[in-house]
Image 1: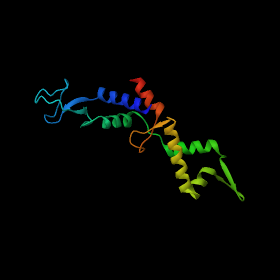
Image 2: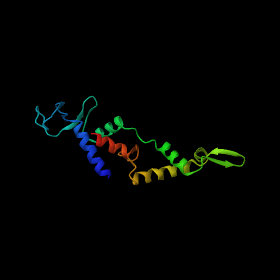
Image 3: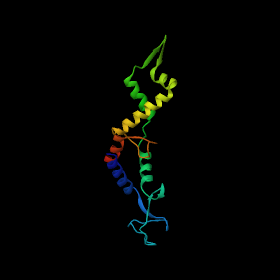
Image 4: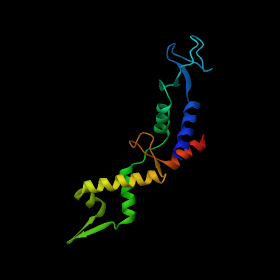
Length: 147
């Protein structure tokens, strides 16, 4: 599924960019530079810039049109749905999530990382930059369907 999404994102990147000759610094709509004849062309997104490849265009599109998943908040919501909201310790009641985060931050981070991996494996979230940024898969699919 991720490969299909990547393929569609690449198609979108090519639709939203122009072939660009870096030697002559001009758009080459035909796929060949009219000035120097080169077909070794970069890609240009008007008012954004130009560079080789399409990954930077995909990154730009996602950053401009989607909100990344706040994995910390999403994991907190997940945990709150699984466990009681408060935990009693002696005579006090404490927020269960905050208690865990404050008193065992390493375990909390490990659990969050496992949750991220599981969500990605199930196809609920997707990262195109090796886990630095996640997007909800349905948001990416909706973006691609709308276009």
